[in-house]
Image 1 (spheres, rainbow, N blue to C red):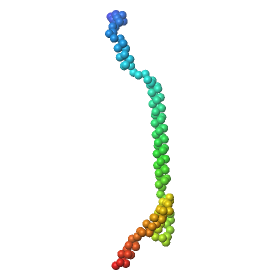
Image 2: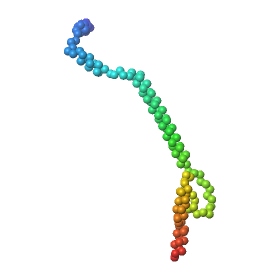
Image 3: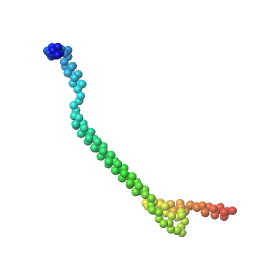
Image 4: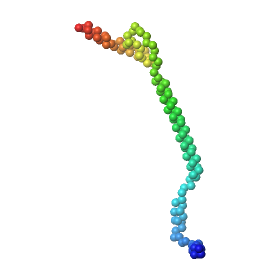
Length: 129
């Protein structure tokens, strides 16, 4: 052990000689890691971002479920009403949407009057023979 102590004493007495000490200092400083944020601050930022993403997912899921429910409510089938036997032929029934104008009602009625049913065609065919 005496030899090791002697070597360490000799090395501590010697001072290294540098050609360019400023360049060595610059290289050391360039290789040091950035001290921008501490690991604790990084964890808090990540936790805050996770909370935001989680809240955004919850809100978007609720909005999607609400839109699906609204779609189903708007497009629900109308309850079947009891069909009454009427004197008017089937082509006189009103199949117009609720927001139709008088012009739509009038023009559609004129178009429906021009319709010919299968039975009418059949009777015309047999009458001509």
